[in-house]
Structures are given as C-alpha cells and as structure tokens.
Length: 274
Length: 301
Image (cartoon, rainbow over all chains, first blue to last red; front, side, top):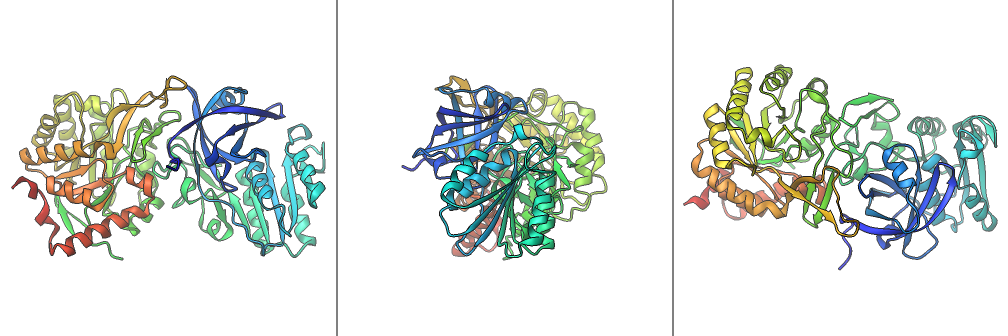
C-alpha cells in the first residue's frame, strides 16, 4: 500500500552538514520526501518542541531527502540542535512546485538565505537540460552565504553563472541581489524565466523588475502555517491558501495578490503590515 | 453551476444545506467569498473571542488514519474588533462563531457585529481543548442558559448552539439551550482525543489532547442528531465525519436540517464542497425527491 503523505513518519537523522554557524542541512531517509517536486515543503516535527514547514532540500543518496534550517526561533533552534541519530517526524510533501519546461532557454534563479533551498532543488533537477542558468545569491555578509560551493561544483560540468551580492560588500557586489538582477536585465533581453525565493520584500522587488522587463517569474511565498493541508486559513494571502494553492505563484497570480509584499496574517490571523 | 438545493433553517433561507464548519477556513473575507462562489450554502467563522488569541504552538493537527484528524489549534482568532473589520463588507451567508469564558464577554462580542450583514451566530459550547472556554462552559448548564439569554438580548438574528460530548449529557445541554431561546443546535463538535508517538514516546500535539474529527466520529454524530431531533423542536445542523453526499443524506435522515463539513476539506480540498452539493442534488433527482425536507428525520418513522 502506498504511504499516505498526511500520516507522520518518524525518520532518523543520518547526516548533517554545517552550512554556516547558524545554518544546518539535515539528511534523512524518506522515499516520499525524496521524490518531492522542487518547491514542495514538509511539515517537520521536532518531538516535544514544535512543527515547522520547511522546503525540501536535495540529497544525493537514493530514497533520501534533506531540510536546511536557520536557527532563529524556538522551533528552528530545537531542530538546529538535532544531530545524527536523533529522530524527527515528517509529513508531506505538500504544495505545488515550480513549473519548468525545456522551452525555457535562459533562466535566472534569485534567492537569499534558506530561500535558496527550493531553488537549489530545482536547479539540481534541471541542470542537465540545454538551458542557460544564472544564479543570483544575496546575503548580509560573506559568512552568511551558503550553497556557493555546491553551485561551483555543479558549474564544473555545466556552465552556471553565479553572481553574489552582500549588503556589506564583503563578497561580490555590494548591495542587494535585486540590484544585480536589474543591471543584468538591462543588458540581457532574452530571459525566459526568473525563479525566486527569499524575504518577501526582496521577492516583491523581483516581481516589479520582472513586470517592467516583461519577463515571466515564479516566487515561493511564505506565510505562517499551521495545518499544511488547507483547512486552518493561517497561511492565507488574499483568497489563496499558501499551503495548498502555493507555495509557488507566478506573475499572473501575484498580480491579483494585493497582500503580496504589503501584509501578512499574524498568529491570531490579524492582517499586519510588513 | 448554481449549487441550488434550497433549504430553510431557523428562518434562514440557504442556497443549500452544506455549511463549512467553524475552525475551517474561517478568518478571511477573501476566502469566504471564494467559498460562496464554489458552492458553500453557508460558512461558520472561526470561533471569535473578545480579544485576539494566538492559539497553541504546532503541531496543532495530526492525522490519525487516512480519514480522521485530531486538532488542538487553541481557538486562535483575531478577536472581535479585528474580525468585525475583516467582515465589514461581507454580503455572503456567514455565521459568526462565538467563544468566551465569562457571560459578560458574549454580549460585547455580539454588539461588534450589530451592523454587519451576517446570517447569525453559532455559540461554541464544546471546544474540547481549551481550558475555561468551550466545553467547560458547556458543562455548566446554568451558565449555558445565561449566556444564550445574554446573546439573544443583543440580537434578533438566529443563534445556533454547538454542542459536543462533554461531561454533561448532550440532550440535557441542548434542551437547556432550547429553553433559553436558541434557534438551532449544531451537533457534534470534535471529541477529546490523543495521539502518542510510540517511537519518541510522547504526545504529538503541543497541547497533548485535542479534538477528534473525521470519519471516526460519524456514527456518534448520527446517533446524537437522531436523539436530539427526537426531543427538540428547534432544527439541528448535523456535523461530524461527513465525507460524501451519502453521509449528508444519513445525517438528514437522522433529523438534521443542514450539515457542516470540515475534515473533508483537508482530505479533498475546497472543491469537495461543490462536489458534495452536486452529489446530493443527483441523489435527490435520482430518487424523485422534489424537496430535500422530505428526507429530514425520515429515519424516525
């Protein structure tokens, strides 16, 4: 009988990767997660602590998947402190995924922080295709960057242009990844798609730049989530539920989301300005 | 599609008897508008308290088999003031669910919706997972009577009272509600339940105990609606584990004038609302039943 994705599976952490002093990737065996589409997420249970929605990261091992976590609040810190041998609960994968087809010949990925996770998973899936890839990555400072080595590794076999922006200028261009995007689009007029994930105000800028340049885009939107299965409304943005209608929305859908980049629902459901 | 299976309940004319239960997709006007369009006969909001509540930390819901859930959201809601702003432009068939811990709170909440275009209210007397709210109120019959009277003093709109299987007998609570002026009864709420993970040896829900919903509770719901409709004059909204149109028919035969769905939406998505309405319509057409009222309580014959 196939496993029901709604039922929680207990998995053992088999490996960890320290990405930065505050970011860790956790690897585990779970066949359902291993076949997650790029952009899908898991509800991850840290026993006795919390349950968090987290985008699925790649693993090179068959039937395995991973999650990448930045220690921030109560739940994410509890998860960050987990190590090899510890157990966590997984349900999902949930949500839609980035769209991709081979007619997209010139693609930009733009992300920052743990927002890089779904973009890296997407690139992993499509890097063998005959398309041109540009990856724009942003961080506050050099020490907070991660996944760069992974992309450099992939770039050995296949040309991937990696552009880096740091707010303090400690690596790459000083400023924001959206500054690089704006400059890039003023030169390159043949971009077919921009995939983005990261802070919403950054993605709002990406959307605005994409619209001005008539380039298609898709963004992975984040909202406070409870159920993950489309019944609690915690994650609603306008009339959409991020957990089941998203998390990926394209520019046509985003155009109707007047709350995008403007407001979100807090834990009690009150619409709150960013 | 028009989703029309007209039904009148407690003086309200509904497009059809399929209502979205409280706690399900209940806090955004944009979502309400979407639900009306795709076939919901009415919607009950999340239970609204006087002040905002953040609810419990996750996990707030756990799937116990492929058709049932246990949840302990902790009555997260934006509070009366914010929610009255949220729905200030509502034109659809909305019932506002009310929850509180003191009698005095309810009249204050109801007054916030005095000028709103809503159908009426549902009083949550049966939330099984928040102390001093919901079920613990429902177990105090004198308090139930007083709260209902205080609400009825503030509004002429219909008030449904949602009952569950708490410490007090469900029939007794419902009779008290009827005598206090309730216009209808919603039965049943979720049942106190628990899920323990045997590998990590700990309860899954943050609150440890939650409310069981879905297929597992349907036979209990049917029994309660059957018994309630035998002893009450006011109409009943049946709720608990409805997954198909045949479950709707079963609840109506037991005596429900309308029904509510919840867990189904988690399993099959929001398009399941319209599907269940259309399934019910086909059932009525196939059986040459011109008015759905004909099947209400038919099992009592």
